[in-house]
Image (cartoon, rainbow, N blue to C red):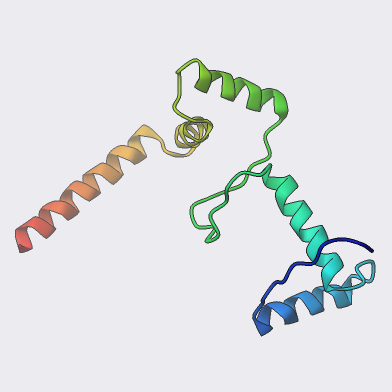
Length: 119
């Protein structure tokens, strides 16, 4: 196979993980082939968007193109600042009830008063 070479430095633990994966996937012949497949899949999955390496607090969602188009239109029309804002609002509406939110606010208020009293 022709192509340009790149250099990639990995820790021993990562190399073991790669080799173990290749051992149970005979359709992948070597580390280079796995790297090509993995890089292409990563780029295609995220559509070239920037991804936080830590993965904390982030979820990658596949949204149907028609829905994504509607969301982008709402951002363009000024209803939202970003597509992310739309998703977060929808999740909050679904998972954070008004009663639960009030309970959390009350608990935080009490906690802050206790901290202030100790100062």
